[in-house]
Length: 489
Ligand code: BES
Ligand code: ZN
Ligand code: MN
Image 1: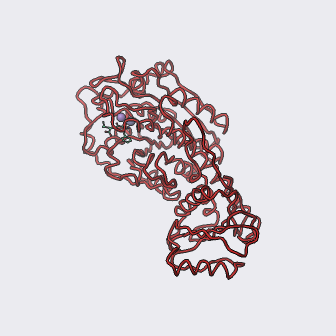
Image 2: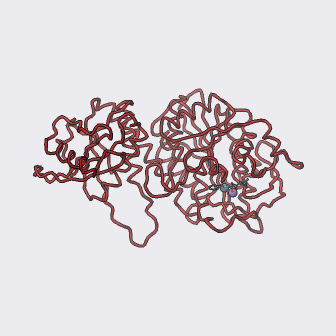
Image 3: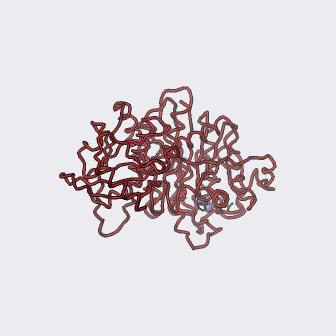
């Protein structure tokens, strides 16, 4: 599954079981110097027969007679030349990893496609796509299946040194994104707050960032009544994980994630259909953890604090109830009108703690509302932001790495929706503008520090992931967070 920069720029002289020839849709000539007439003929015949047109992700496998080595070739559609972006590159290489695994080859060589992006960005995207595409959740089957993951050699690179750096960057980010995906798949009996906190401790040791775990006792000392409230119905106690990457920089970025390891809804119980999906209600926290690992490896010049608010939302004799009032770390009170709106409750403590730590920017992400799926489906993350500067940085970071984000308005009138008669705010204002009020409620705890909320309920788990053909956890926001940290440093 490794990715290498080939020493030679000529595709066909790279030692490999399979040579992949990229073909554009609008110009089907092969752009390779030392290509034999036979290859041109093979492609030409396929095109005349309309077997292959160079459409994005289309493939055509062939066995040229003249190759005594037994090396096979694969034509791979790149789509129209002027439509090729680094995002498409990621998808193309992800698809290639899946196709070539089925071909049971050990090594694959492909020339780096060109477009209106730098060679370095192309290599990063190719490496990311390959590693994301090859990854699968192993599962818990009695017998594990054998996998044939070939190595990839990228040829046609002009600046091998900077390309190697770009490749290493892509490998780190994609591997950490896969860690996040893995956490999303893990069922809640195998990933409850304590275990996710242990994952963070191990990751901190591995990648070199510090990790503190605030257990129930510590949460009580700090008077984090909101996180405690949500967690009190479960046999698995809640905790807050504080991770720090210290670059000795002047500015600090705080990344905050919702980590509900299972969201049954609590006393406001969810319907049982598809309730199993709520094992992935911790993917905000998962993205923060994956991003912290990649940040510690790639070392941007900004301090980064990662906070994970971890709890399991369960109905029980000790569970928090509709009508309860909880007090968050910053002293604000929340009336619980629906125990299923638990994300904003746990985040109220985590975000006020980020403000307490004097972060310069707070970026929080959560699988917060079903409503964001109604607005944007699985195609984009919903953003609620108060600071235009930070909002633009995050939007741009997302665009650069191919993670779509769409900003929603925050009109002051929406505030009326979450007013409470008995507390400072109520947690569940109702259906109207549900994604916006969710974000605005969390923002109440940011203490006026530039704040961005990213609702990933639709993008953290998709039917057809950005790079994987099968459905499942995407690890969305890992790439955006890593890009953001480098961008603002
Ligand atoms: N974790 C859910 C949101 C969710 C829904 C995530 C679907 C992924 C897919 C969240 O805790 C929740 O239950 N939200 C409620 C909020 C409402 C009670 C204000 C919702 O969306 O219905
Ligand atoms: Zn939830
Ligand atoms: Mn819920």
